Amino acid sequence: MTATTATETTEQVYVPATETIGAVLDPRERPARPSALSASLTFGWRAVLKIKHVPEQLFDVTAFPIMMTLMFTYLFGGALAGSTGEYLQFLLPGIMVQSVVMTTMYSGLAVNIDIAKGVFDRFKSLPIWRPAALVGNLLGDVLRYVLASLVITVVGLILGFRPGGGVMGVAAGIGLLVVFSFAFSWIWTMCGLYLRSEKSVMGVSMLVLFPLTFLSNIFVDPSTMPGWLQMFVEVNPITRLVAAVRSLMAGTPDMGELTWVFIATAALLAIFGPLTMRAYNRK
Amino acid sequence: MTDTAIETNGLVKVFGDNRAVDGLDLTVPAGAVFGVLGPNGAGKTTAVRMLATLLRPDGGAARVFGHDVVAEADAVRSLVGLTGQYASLDEDMTGRENLILIGRLLGFRTPAARARADELLEAFGLTAAAERQVKNYSGGMRRRLDISATLLNTPRLLFLDEPTTGLDPRSRNQVWDIVRAVVSYGTTVLLTTQYLDEADQLASRIAVIDHGKLIAEGTPGELKSSVGAGTVHVRLRDPGQRADAEKLLSAALGATATPDPDPRRVVVRVPGHGTEAGAAEDAARALSELAAAGIVIDDFSLGQPSLDEVFLALTDHPATPKETAA
Image 1 (cartoon, rainbow over the protein chains, first blue to last red):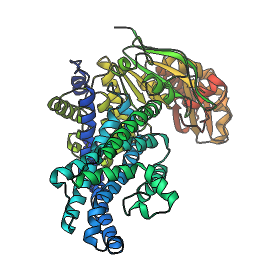
Image 2: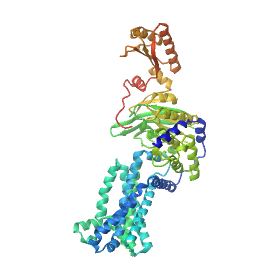
Image 3: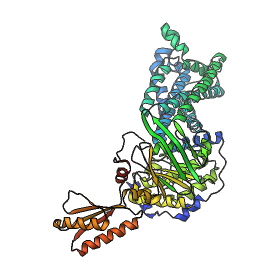
Image 4: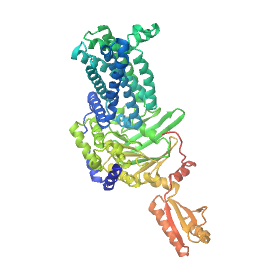
């Protein structure tokens, strides 16, 4: 391996010199503690850098959504709406919600891996705003959500998606989805802190996300479902979110659904933010 | 300046039914290397994590430069740095990026954080590897980067938790040199280790802990004199001379020979005078007496007392590692 050879060459050269180490230890003015925002943004920068170094991790926000959109458009389009083009108008906002909401589970995975590797120990021993590391990770995730949404929009437009709300409508829909997903991610961040391994984080989030996204109004009109299932679909927060995003993209904002989504977002943050921080401080 | 860096009173941490730290009382003077010696599972890491505010104590109190580790955690965090047993680095990022990240989190603006990172990479011999991802670093380089990240904000107190465990001898010597340099510029270092040799090399005071309790504390010399300064091992050419050799050596060193299964080996504990030079002198004199008596030896060594011997002497039980993680 080339890395090993290079490593050994550098090792041989290094002899610690007291004066050089002393020079960097010279007591100098300590900078002021960074603000909560600045610390969070720094962690966001870290998340972006990690994407740069491990670009494969963007697979789940690029290839996966493209696959989902193509698969379900052509699988269900003819049967459910008579034509794939027509079905797409109905499906696209929903499949976007599904893809992005599915991506939220990676927030939990990232936290779990960070803890397993010990890098959080360093972050926790720094005098910074405590939630910054977690908020920063989620800021990086927000970037991924936006990317996934844009990918799906582009695929949709190519396939013939023509939203009535125009650019503004689509942008508003994406914005709402991203804000909700940011709040929703705190659930997985909390799981990432409590659960032992990344496998269990994955397992738990799949168990919740699959029924939540499939038993909703994403693929079909709930009125065709049996009564007991309709009841679940009606109270499923994803149904409300999809309805709100659809209404925005169609250019006919549904104030009722929007209000519901905003309240749910605030509630998620208010409940899972503090719970997550409690778990974080105990770790 | 306070003269005491760390003071703990009855510090306790319980994990389930394991009392990892069980009423620990420590006083660590400022400005020197303080060694915490103990086997795996003795509670060293748990104690350090409480002192670095990463774990909340279940009982007792601890103060770092006069600040309570629970009530004034932020004040403590701004004075201490911790390099743990496992590198707290981001494996996917480069060495330089890791340092810039920590620098920015400490409040340096980006250009200052960059300058500081380059300065540290230079001082720790990592400039050539600066743009490489940490996952491609060797164990020694990783440890140096980890220590340099901890030194970014020139902490007044540096915790090094088993800094040389798993390192090859050259990397271990580099870490030792770094510790000596750091402490010579006024930073207090608390170092945990499983090796008496390491504590002896670096620390001016050593605390021995076992099962979460302090069992001995003193200068390396004081500790060693409580267990003897070392052991003389001699390998004879002629096993027939063993009895004579044992008698001569015992008389010269003032101690009885330890029985050894090898008929050509003679093992004698050197009683301590508190200094290594003393032990070496005694051993040299004893050997010349062997030569004068016409006893030929093939091999000879003066061994340092091992951690096991220290434990045996202090606790009447050997340093058995507990299986629970510290």
